[in-house]
Amino acid sequence: MSDPIFSNPNNSDSNPLNRRNFIKSVSAIGLASATGNQFAHAAPDNSKADETAVKGLYESLTDAQRKEICFDWDHKDASRGLLRTFVSNNWQITKPHIRSEYYSKKQQDLIHEIFKGLVNPDWYSKFLKQLKDDTSGKEWGADQSIAIFGKPGSGKFEFVMTGRHMTLRADGNSEDSVAFGGPIFYGHAADTFNEGADHKGNIFWPQALKANKVYQLLSEDQRKIALVEKTPPEAAVAFKGKEGKFSGIAVNKLDSTQKKELQGVLSGLIEPFRMADQNEAMACLAKQGGLDTCNLSFYQQGDIGKDGVWDNWRLEGPSFVWYFRGSPHVHVWVNVADNSAIKLNAKG
Image (cartoon, rainbow, N blue to C red; front, side, top):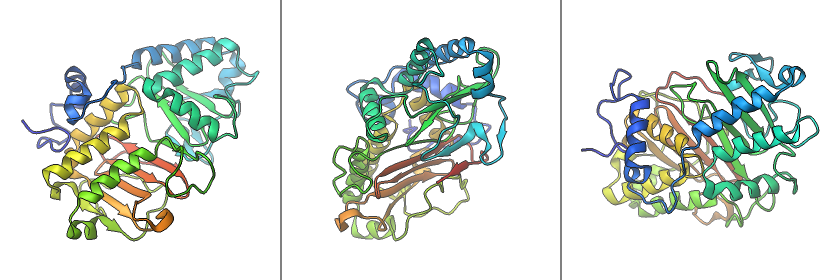
């Protein structure tokens, strides 16, 4: 049996192994088995509790609050387009901050419960550090905002939380074709805007170090293909489809040792998030053909310290983009779906 992470020969949209069924199979065998990597603590699937908390939050809102932070499923904003799917590196989806008098203590606790459920418990304290570092020492919720689309408990809905270096979503599986409820963003400026080559204290920098281990395993000829001169624009994470032109080296050209190391990279990328979202991302990748349909690129531009430890890199497939930008500090753009017809709504 082939490894679903690398290939799925029946990857058409008519494939009976649809995304939901694949999620169930991945959940049954465990993510560690599917990726060939062992996690010390697998993230529990908090999706049902999370969506229940979103419903409870929605029901607790006053009419005035709903008018301010609740929107129709397809609400369009004059400057951002379809607001539910918008993503950026530093933005507020609505004006009220979570930790403010606008929300009651009970409502703040519910929002915190939702946020906590969206991340791997092993990463919860790391995300709190990121939020504090990136808001000049403010506590969680003091500089983040939320919105709710649709009506939780009756049809499609989505909860969105935004702020500097963060866009997270909980959608109750309302969006069948996308992982994470839509494109997400995470980042960190641990100490200063212009981080040094070692990115001291940056909670996401280990992801880049894992990717650089793959680069070190490449032959000289492979490195010439994988290393690209210029980085793409920051928000350039739209899907290119199966016929798209991808930079870097094709994963199907890697040997078994290199592929195994890349499995570890993928595991590290999805690890910060709850198990339901990890599974959805894996299912979407399998549906489009697995890692063997992806390319891996490293970028010379933005090499902090000129040390050959590439701060900027990208793993990309037909409808899978994970774009890690470590210069001048970490910005990571994530866009994952099971087909390439889904349009991106983003601004760098």
